[in-house]
Picture 1 (cartoon, rainbow, N blue to C red):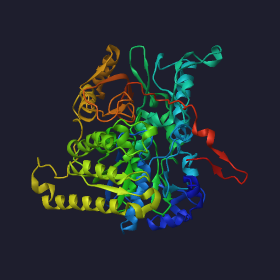
Picture 2: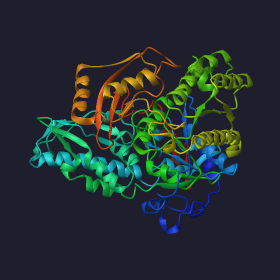
Picture 3: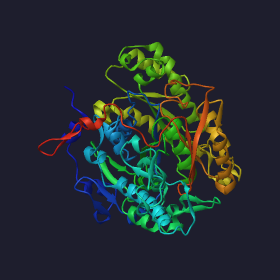
Picture 4: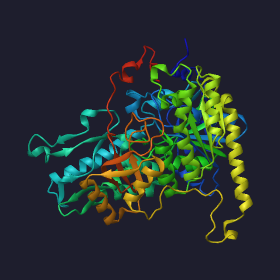
Length: 577
């Protein structure tokens, strides 16, 4: 019987976190330990790193997800370990797992097999309490809104136009829409409300985009929570809420340091979903890692159309981060699924279906290389049932557009199984550095010269919100057009007129397809993307466009993963995957 992920993690020999920190040059006094094997690194220490140059940034992304799973986090860990094995100073940066999917359908998000971050149970369950802090800060603001209305409503909040929602870190469809304040005058004014999952909250986005504590507090104050009857926005600072919210988040803002099974340092910090939020771990973690290591591997959630798009158009646009290379995770199973094979038949060889399904991979490669200008390699996350013919066909598909595809066996063999992938990543980074050096200093090229390795965005800053959404839909998703109801169009125009048109757009849609229909596999074209709802995230400084049937509060499946999780008489957690 195969050893489970949690059994592998529990059998591992972990180094004390002080030893991991020492290898990064972090003094022990700058650590806030949470037990022996995880710690927060002080914001004070991170400030001392700002004069150091950044290392090379590797963006891990993937094809459109399938029910079988592609192993993006596992590949991030495996590549980090492989870079260390071939002699490079490497770190990885991951998002923190949310309890919603841990207890729901997906399970944990700490890697798998022999490519995991540890302690796996801690990381998947509670960890250092960051998500709790984000939930408390969000719900404190909600409580202050209703309290303000109850005690006289000096700001004139229109209770019909309260836009701020409460959050919970558990999938619970029953709380998507609710009525609060029932029970008489002592319980406040009744109004419609609802819950989102923590990872979809604006506070989570702010937390992950903030550059320091002052920026965090400033952004929290900018949150628009409601409107008056004459449509005047009410912000968190109007309620004097942002100071207390920042106080709650102060300790959480420090990145969490852990290790892989092979002792590669890892920051696991922040965790917005990419299908309903912006999908990247905290900027503070990634930027700090880049100043402590020569190579940093970070992931963006789900397929490149979602996570990588937001990494480029939101995170890179607003922070100046630039990926040196992208890795697209693909599996033989995923390509067969996108080629029309049903889940039950995926273990059977089907080269024809695989070749048909590689259209999904090729669409993502075109976006990364031609739209954004990022050198790219394909990581074929190997499974035992993959046949030689199928693997060869997948490699040939990537090579047909000039991209190298490397078979990686990190799940079974750890870092050693991804050494070839690591060498290709280094080669691409060296190639880009050589081009940069050959071009010479930017000043010598003239004011209008573009670097040979320039990162391009999907849309310009000065495009309207409608045109930005249309660019994402047509250039990235292959759609023919976008649509919206009269009310949604009016809301988009109102946000444009109120001065938010310069913000990036954050799309919430299904992760399973380029379209808004999760059943439409492969690389569909000519479909229509309908914008169902628009939300302003003034503190995060982007506008959320909710498309199709995607929900910002997921529900649990028929058989939740929570049903399999338990703790034995010795206190060991079992059933977590």
